[in-house]
Amino acid sequence: DCGESRHVVGLAKTILFFAVCGKANLNTRIVGGQDAPAGFWPWQVSLQISSHFCGGSLINNQWVLTAAHCFPSGSASGVNVVLGLQSLQGSNPNSVSRTITTLIVHPNYNSNDNDIALLQLSSPVTFNNYITPVCLASTGSTFYSGVNTWVTGWGNIRSGVYLPAPQILQEVQVPIVGNRQCKCSYGASSITDNMVCAGLLEGGKDSCQGDSGGPLVIKQNNLWIQAGVVSFGNGCALPNFPGVYTRVSQYQTWINTQITTNQPGFMAFTSTGTDSDLSVSCPGVPPIVTGTANTTTTTTTTTPTTASTTTKPTAAVCGYAPQNSRLVGVNSVTNNGQWPWMASLQKNGKHVCGGTLVSFNAWTVVLGRLKQNGSNPFEVSLNVTNITLSNQTGSNVAVLQLSTPPPLNNYIQPICLDNGRTFTVGTTCWAAGWSSGQGGDEQLLQEFQTSVLDCGANSTSSSICTEIFTLEQVNNEAFN
Image (tube, rainbow, N blue to C red; front, top):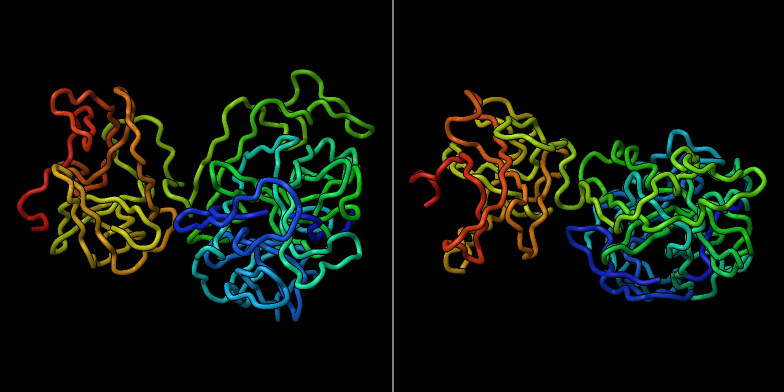
């Protein structure tokens, strides 16, 4: 092992989350290392066996992400996961505790790489201001040198010095150190593409022993994204030895393979400008030859971009359709899961209207359906307990409340809703539905590519006009 397992020296704040990961309503921290007020990092967890030994992060209502080295025996027996915790001593009115039913260590973990593990809680937790999941950095995310991040934990305040009573959660802001620079500090073979480094090269701010497994997060568009898992380092906050973290974006496929329902929210973080790490060289880390940057082994430098920071939500976030690779097409029959928010509203077993799932925990009817006639192995049917009609004149909108929350998977997902933007003429859009006379005997779900038109004199603020496409007209058998 080239370093010590970690805990935090100086640490930040948060906001409230409901259907989307990464919000921390109580967090307005900008710089500095200090005690973190209650609720500033609502995904932070403490792993305990009589006392705290590692950190972790809540990534959905029943799973925690942590470091594999926190479980050297390969067993989680007797471990408690404490959420909503501010201090290790004294009163914590917002904390809840769970045991662990499943420990999943990465199959390729060893002391040199893949230091990541998943913990399944004994029962789901309820989200509030103090308990909220963090978003995870998705595949291809880039973190250039100098990008500011935050790390949190209850670890030592310096090597060999425990966090003093009442042991309040610590927060510190540290900049990303590129993998090439990090290799110059630790040795080229010690830093892999599965790692990301962060800290001040002059020292003074870092994670430390006891912070192992905790999150390294970065803020983007008011959401917090976990870039790393506290893994190891040479001492704590020493000059030229930044902290080393497991790079979360390298493990999206593995995490989604282990968590098949209510999957965590993955979001892309793309650094802008030029990464100064590209110009770093030292013994064992030769200069990058001009024109070969795309072949470098440093993950943070393989995707040069000048684009703005963007987000790319996935399963736990609205708008994710993992089965849909649609680019172009007109009136083509869809496959299972291409429009996972599509709902069929039925009366007496007969389809009368379409709908869209808009909330993770309760709203809209027959979900996951592909065919009106035939087998639909992924569908779920739920009763409607309440119908709310818009009170705005001319608004043809209704909201249906479901009897129970639907399970989320590749075939059932909520859709994102527009927040009042305007759509320019010519904007391409898609519609989906079970059109009369189309889809063959099985009445397959149809999809239509169209574009926005100028509504002219018929325009209202509550309408959007598009080119003509065929969709079923609701008849007198609709709800009345």
